[in-house]
Image 1 (cartoon, rainbow, N blue to C red):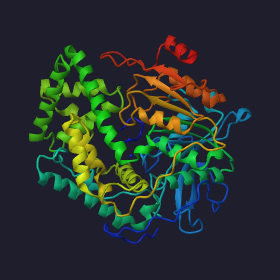
Image 2: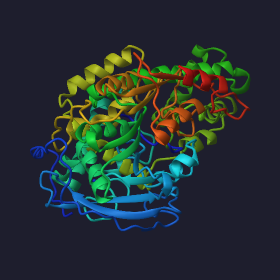
Image 3: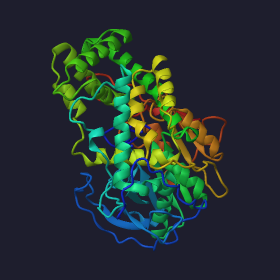
Image 4: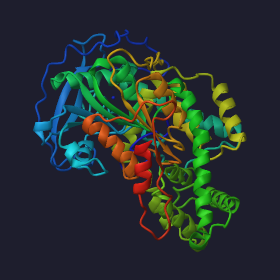
Length: 548
């Protein structure tokens, strides 16, 4: 999923001694691990020490947390074989009288780092009452090859060819104007995949969501717990679904927020995104038109859209600073399809460029290429490494070409080709994809809480509905009209969803099981220029949702 990550951060749907392997080499898939088998080779116990205030690898604040590491098998079919290192953090429970065990956290990706998350949940930064947060040991972890978790003894995660993400100058238009331009993009994607194979070889075949779930169970075992609680956003909902399917009796409570559709993993899910992101982009344009007196970009949706594409065409001819061209403009606007609290700043930057001919605000909003940004490069490498091997992608480019041009010609111009090139390395990945874990409820799995906004672009609404059906005793909380990716306990979370999620985490309270959605919240209103965005629903809406 394109940039399917960081719903609890301000950014953005994304692994020793490994011998080189060329991109043409496709080693066999690893020996299957029986469902429900945990890592028996992992010794219990993690040595916790105080974390540094500022993490040197990720640049995140870890002050007040405890840090530790855990060795786990690269290949769980050979648990005593080669080991890799997971980096963990902990915010220890302060209310030991009402202790509820450990809760693991994942912000999405695949590839999102996670060691900074425990502070937010323990201290109630985004709406979880501290009375609930104090009862858990919150466990942050960088999944295998992410952040400070290493597969090669380097002490940090993987990166591949940095020039794919950061060429140093404005990239060719995502939408190819000729066969030659399309072939050039394909060559870039192929080179990226080849470089990943050269750097990490056959270790890439172990970068599956199933192995990430087994790593989570290794953490559980090492911490001496029979069960875990879990909160996952975005891709983290798929990871949680995999864990619940493999280890149903090891789940205590689980929240899946902004849910991946398992039947679409991963090629079809990305095509679904192209349509959903187009709809959210159109919503953003309509909102700008409503405030034409502020932004002067057009008083109608069509006028604003025409001016956006005039800006895009101008940047194609003359990129700002030689770097911000049409692709970089679309990347910046894509954030607005994830969340609405960026709208005012981004609309103002477009206005400054179009009306005042001042491009600096656009440059500031874009932020530049992530040449030296380890986390961005690492996130993308892991994003590919997991998605490309969870399931085999089409290797015949004719299918990619046919599907993407079909969507583009149907009017989904905003994201379609950018999304295609973001995922294109999977067409050339150096190891073959496998068979995903079957997502379904099993005996011993307690009710889990699924949270989904009706108008989410990154993980469209059908994902939440499908996972609710696959886990029959789950509960589905729907945010009507919600457009933000990450519904509860986030910067854009609303009080209604926060309250229902907090009640579940606090004392296991769930809405009654009903046909369809089990509970509903109304989305907060869209932002108003000049006003502080109100991220909370009204008390009336809260009461109505709870009463339902």
